[in-house]
Image (cartoon, rainbow, N blue to C red):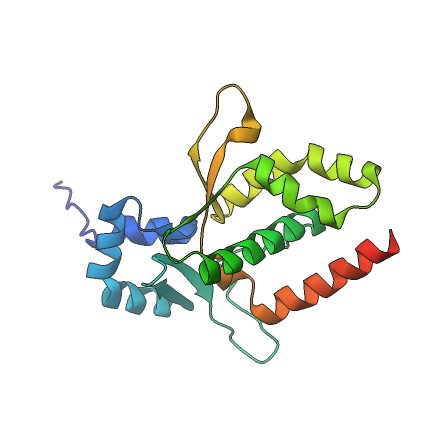
Length: 196
């Protein structure tokens, strides 16, 4: 009995990567495939109730579930994950920093930060040292979680001091957190800070 080799779509590799999470322009071969097969990928994902979102200016892409009715039901292919309060705080501060950077720095292409710089920005949110110490102690873990979600990319790992690790802040944060959500969370943060 002769085995017939299955016909594999030329965009299979990029389709699988998109199902695993956001795709960025690095490595460039994946990004090139994404652009080359954009129409085919869009049609493929539409069949399984997913929208392919490509931001060509900021050079990232991700899949968004199509809502099947007014209640927001989806086919459930992509698991919705709620971020913890602490992780939402980290993401909110990163997004605010990114938006400031984009409006102020016209020469640099990307925003790079270190945990040390992030801690310095955090100081305004904590009046009691106990709260700050607990959060700051876990900061590197939260930054690692942000990296897992594709919001940060570790570009330099310092073997001696992890506070000097260097991260690129990814612009996909702007797609994950809309301006009204950002304003709402910031207002809630300010209330929390005043009540401490």
